[in-house]
Length: 157
Image (cartoon, rainbow, N blue to C red; front, top):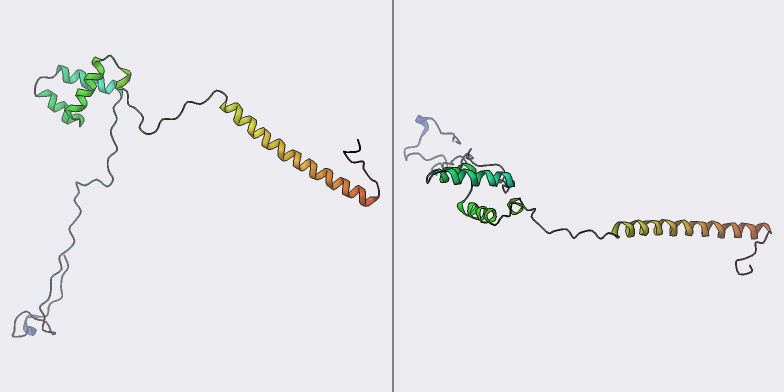
């Protein structure tokens, strides 16, 4: 809380609680304290393994009428999730109970994709090597011409 400076009792004017400029002092309240119950970052989406789903379904099947609600509260679940899991379990889809990775699915790699990538890298490397070799040969021809030792050109052969 912000404390205001107030004049001594004997210096208060006769008009009341006014200050020297003739205005009443205004009170400024302190900012509200942060609630200790708030989390600093949001929770991530909870995922259950297939074994967890089967375990929870078995517990709720064994539980009485009031026990199912207690299990749902303890696990932080809604009854709709149990309905979905039961439907998947009854369909015999144990694999369907496993958590699915969210987001776009990667396309399966083509069997020749790795070989194609390697061949492209080799082609690029060899092309660069060829350019350097041709540049060296051109320089050698020019040096030989300057020294008076002509080298026969490729067309003459």
